[in-house]
Length: 444
Image (cartoon, rainbow, N blue to C red; front, top):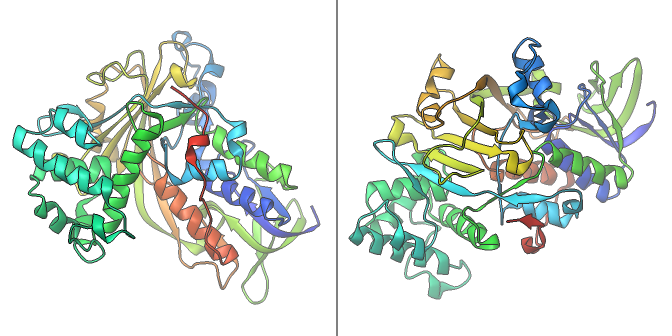
């Protein structure tokens, strides 16, 4: 280990593995270490025995649940937007050859009264949706046509609206949309976590809605999402393979790994078992930099094992349900995430449902009640509360480039924004993801 590297990456979470792979492809000599004896860090997928060891005091899982090896339960469950940044990164780096994907069956939203509706994403779906009355459907259709046609570089598509200055609320108002319609568009299509976006320029939200619609059209399935067979734990391992192919070195089970700083306060290596590996900079998750991060929030997740699909989701093998904040009198949204044996993450005829949100009270588990009520009967559940950390500095001074934690959202767009930010801070250039996502291998 007493060698010199361009970069040392600490932690094998998805963000760290993507960065490790990208740096290796660019020719940097990379050493990647983890205190754990498995890949994935906070974003790992666990089998049934590992889940019970971690959360049930080592109890033996019930035989009725089937073989432990059939389970790959995500600790931070998220779907991938079919036309999103993570898919583009997978294709750009050719990591797709290590993975198989399957489309997610459905995307839903809960409205007042607790009713679940399929989320319409196009003008055609808006006309068929039970979410809106006849006249509101027409207004929503006009809005969706505007969004689908809008191109920043083509003034003819702007219809007199300057989305760089006009707020999103002003744009909604121009189309005469009702509050309930605004709610599901903002939270179920644009996937905004709260209503703060309403007072901001409309362009980012319009782009987010276009991404949702384009992802729906990419594979022409019931949702804009895809998901890897055998769970999300496959993703960090796939990027780790990429790094290894380009000369990256991996060392797991290094529980005493600590960052070393020089007299100028710059990260210059990592020490473990009395040996020091030197480097030009260090990348890692917040757990390796306790004095250089701040806690900004907490995320509570309840992971449930079930023997049935979530009711009112058309017997979906996989789906997402968004519970907008206004429906729950909360400051942030709540999310329900469901996968099953169809994605090879559980035993036959078992479903994995997860409810998650940002903690707002001193009783996090109780906050999840509205989401848990949608699941129906649950055979087993575990609850986790994870702190969200952010770096205090950008790494330019101390050469320590630190990722943020994983938020409550059930998609990877915020994860990739952090990866792209880290990449630019490290390399000084933007991450180029200009590839055609249609190359992804997706099972219908």
